[in-house]
Length: 409
Image 1 (tube, rainbow, N blue to C red):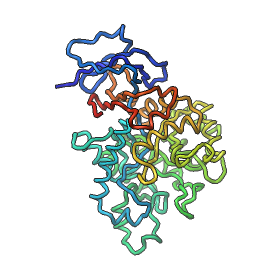
Image 2: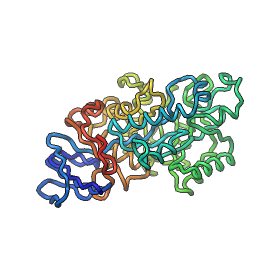
Image 3: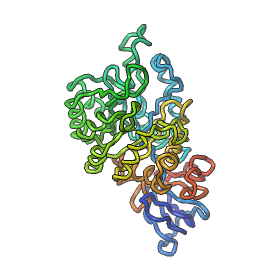
């Protein structure tokens, strides 16, 4: 039997950025929203079960547009490749459950060996978790940011390391990239992730280095788009960011710089606006959950410039290791950081974590806002996040979580 639910009496924040609607009614039939409006304008048909949301905020499920569901708990790369994959995926099952329990109903993977399988298991109802947009293994060059340092693992066969890497595959040169993209698409991914710059993991992994050529990037983007897959690019210096923009990626991840140079400039921001390229800054990750003072001024200035010039932002946690960034909670901390660090209004932060997350993921026609025809991903929240965005971080304030019309809490 399909659900027929009427959410009544709450204050609706629909994710579009429009003003909240008091005493709203949201009708859900099956997986979809079939009507939305003020109580005096929406007739509730017979047979609909009423859910009283009086005193609560009704809003879209949150979207984490940059997350690694890896099942990892250790920073030690040796553990990554010698630990049983069965152990890791069992942890990953718990991790996706924690993400949904925090009110995050959709995630966009930024590289994971297990995300395709988790996605299928969730869709089949075998396990509980958010809707997953899968990247599979992201693409790195040899010695790239996620690649495992050979001096740490030199006693192990390289094939073992490559076959068990939790989040990346190695591609060097145009033809390896072409084949890598085609293999990933054949595996069933939704988009392609590339680490285009270093990331500061160790002394040879410099953020200021660009890791792929213009020809390699153009090949990756052209192959991906030909196969209707979007592209997300990790960039941590301005040269890499501009190369990604010129190649036509769909989203830029991070766009910071650890060497004191501008993370973004007017040329980059203008091109991003013109090409509708969305920025996923992962502020919570860059500040390690601390305040604005921990974000370097050059990086903050770049983000402020992007805001002023109209670049679209989506929220992403970059969660990888749960001991450093708890799954689920960190996804919501990112929404708070958009306000406390970047100066977003609470409404703009919610839009970044709903509507813009859906657009970044290529599914804006399906989720991200509470509108007629969209999938029913809906939260009931105790309190008003427009007055205090921080209430979303505490799980006890999320009174009900609905994903595709099914109530999970």
